[in-house]
Image (cartoon, rainbow, N blue to C red; front, side):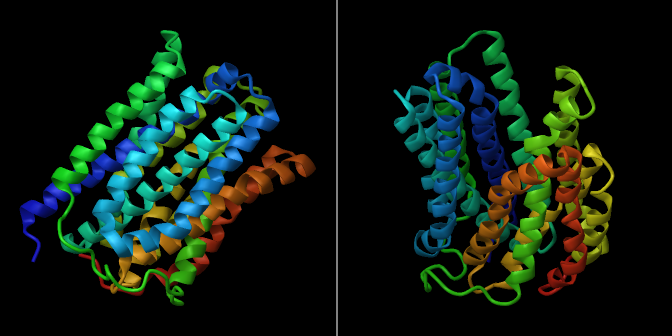
Length: 368
């Protein structure tokens, strides 16, 4: 039996790790132009690096479930944190394009490994609580991302080179993550640990995977194209364009901090249907609409496969990240054909699928 004090400590520790992961990835994203300038990368070389990041992420997602089944989510989180935070200085000191691509592969592997491990452990903590707390963890990822972006803005203003910024940020975030994991994560084996490393996901996970895919497509569309839309379509200035993403992110944080309580009151099925309707309204409202979709889907995945929740979370996560990989290509193609406005409309429209499939989340234990 897990003691209440251990659960409270684990909840805080998992929240810290989510924030560290978001800050690490946000650190990289906000300084992409600086890295490109330092290495003198062409657009094609930068695209190759981003493809390497995606490739590393996909490989890690395919293997993360097996890793968790072998060593547990606590140890896997340590591995993921070391690789992710170690990847930041590798990106900063890459001597040329090939090394840059390789460094981003490492960054992608670390990000996905830590992502799946911390979500699997979050499912374990939520199971101990016996009520929804999953969306709150994801709010801390957004908080970390904003903090990382803010630190990047300061680094840019103070003319701190990425060769100094990234190693320092990586070292600090690694220390924070390791203290949280080793000092706060629940000890002992995860449920299902030591079982088969690979297994076909059950039918209960299929709608959850599609829901995660749709949620990631909508969220990724605003992340990738929101500022471009405000700048090119609405003729907003740079400051206003950046505020669009800020409004989206802040709304995501606020909704995720409150989503668990709402899910506990109205249930996951009703919540997802309402979220899919709300998501059509605008950038800040999109944040409110999609904020809870991914955490609710991942939480439901852990409940749908109680014998091996880590493997189930990894499977649904893989479907979700596939949405991130598909979204830029599809939105770009639609924008080329009919304009960016229609590209974003199509991305948000996929959240309608969530309303249709929301009933698939109803299986599993009740909430209270």
